Image 1: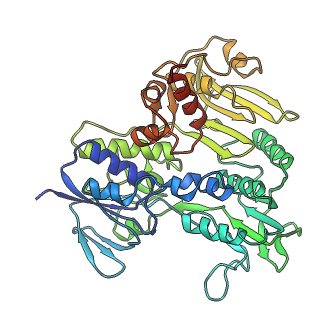
Image 2: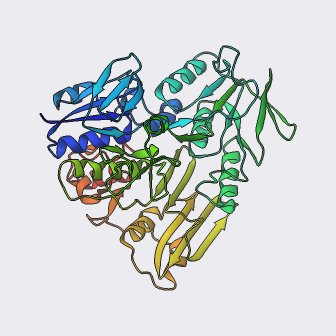
Length: 460
């Protein structure tokens, strides 16, 4: 009997894994359990649906027909109650599903900030309060915006998701504020100087920013902050706080720190028949939190399960903020990577650029407000090109070339899916690019370059 593989979770990492298993000719029966009713979709682009630039159906990664065509048992609206390491998954309806190998792709779950009045006595969120983590959350928020627009909105959380939501609401004509408890916006990715430039850009676009303060109470008028300020709000959106979803793994006796601890084949260090990937996995003490590392893990695990000699040694981090009027790219970990820092800021223009260089090689970078040189910087970062003493500074100057006139075929264009310019040029159109390579279906930051390469490939 062929191996029975059960994947718990039907998000972006799980879908990428199944695609890899299909492509690699995996000799086993695959069952995918997703607790949402929607087919697997691109969670990163939910803010684009909120903004109105994408239709909800365009976020679908693979429809049910694709899973049927490839012999994969996709079960939507199915929640797992327990993992029995004797070889069964227990569902909430009491039914049991046998397995020989298990993959946990449970992602992360939101945590409610300690704000009094968020939750009603019946355990539900107050009608003016919205979470924003799933398609159902997005649908609910869109329904709230479908009638007369709220007067003001407050977004709690100044991370990537919070800024995307704030800009989407502003584009729809809803004025508001962002409240962030740390000293600056995007504190997980940016230093304070870059965060201040970003806050200034956001204010210029019509959204006020409050940093270093926390919301403590939901009032009839809006939100009260811990400094005594009351912010009027008809709508409150929660985007702050999330943690790896590890409850199932803990109850099953698997080793969990912040995430499920895994080795070089993404196998649990407790039980090598169980694997974890994406936001719920912890490798060498690090969590991912971004789509590119999750997809890299999915690729490695698929190859390993198909019999190839593949191992995961960690991933570089490339973060892009996808929000109208805000441009941010972070390569690596600029705030904690050792090296010489080359920095340029222009608060008046709303730009900030920083390179961390060691031995002439770009180890990390931050670009805010102007991404004209992001293609060249990413290429040098990926290739670990050794730069001359004057080159790092020249890269950051406004007159520096934005990108090479013609991108070489081996230059990586889509950091999420690891797709090169040559692969894009070989495709007949954007639809083929998305279906064959998954480029543009991650953070969406590469879509402009991809469209340019496709246009370049069409004869005049």
